[in-house]
Length: 359
Image 1 (cartoon, rainbow, N blue to C red):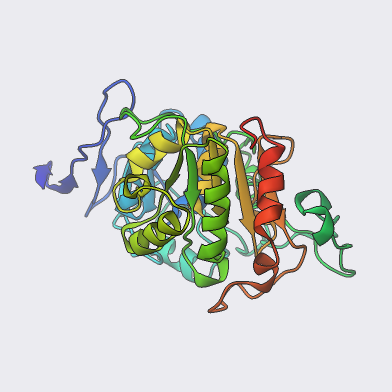
Image 2 (tube, rainbow, N blue to C red):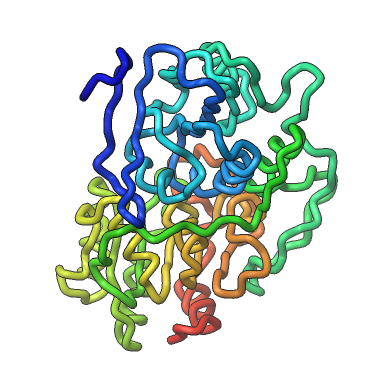
C-alpha cells in the first residue's frame, strides 16, 4: 500500500493488453471531480452481463473517472472490459469506500439495500431502480416463451398470466437508457488477457457452480467428457480451488489423465485465456458460460432453475446452445434443480453435434 496525496491507494499489478497498468482504489476522501462509481459486487457472470451498461456509461462520460465497486478478484476482467478506470474492493452489500462521487449507479440490484449502500457515499446524483418518480424494476409485458432454448423433448408451452422475462443485460441497459445513456446490449465482447493459455483448442468441461441447485450430476459430466475424449476432443476439467475434488472425480470417471484437471490451477486471467483459445465449453448456468459469450467460444450451457431468457447467451449467436427443461424452480434450493436434472448426457451430446467442433 502506498500513499498518494493523503489518500489510501492500492496499486494493481495487473496490466491490460498493451502493457498500461490501471489501478484499483480504496479511497477515503472525495474522489476527483466528475468521478462515477457503479456498484455490481456480485460474481463473474454478473459482471459480464453488466458490461453493455458500463460501456454505455463510459461512452456517455468519456473524460470521467469511472470506478467499479466489486470484489477485488474480479479486477482483471473489470479492467479488460475497457469500461472502468479502477476497482473499489467491495463486498456484496458494501460499504463502498468512495466519498462524494459525482454519480453513483446501482447495477447491483433493485434495492433498497444496495441503493442505501450507494446513498452512503453521498453522491451528487444517484441512478437506481424504484426511486421516487424514476424507472421501475418491473416491466409490464407478457412472456413470449423461450422454446428455442430447449431440447425438443423438453419443450413446454408458455404459462399463462406471466410477466415477460427480461434478460439481465437488457435490464441494466434499460436503467441507463432511462437517464439518456445509449447502450448496446450486444456489446459483450472482452479483450484477451496478456497471458498465454495453459492449453489451446481444448474442450472445457466445467462441472461446478456457485450453488448446489445449478450443479448437474458429476457422473453425467464424466459420461459426456468420456464420449468427447473418445471422439478426439482434448478435454480439460476446470473449477475453483474448492471444486478441485469434483473436477478430479469427473476426470477420473471419464478416464482422463490427472493433467486434464485444471481446477484450482488457473487464476482469472488464465481462465479467460483458456476459454478464449478453447474450441468448446460445456457448463451449467455459471460465470464461465458468460466468458464463452464474451470470446465467441462455442458452448453448450445447461440451465435450471432459471430460464436462459434471463441469463443465457444472446439470441442469434448459433455457436452457443442453451439447454433448458422449460420448468422454473427454486433458485435457493439445496439440491440439483429437477428441470436441470431432467437434461440427459444424450441431450448435451446432441447439442455438441450441432456445433462446428462436433463429435
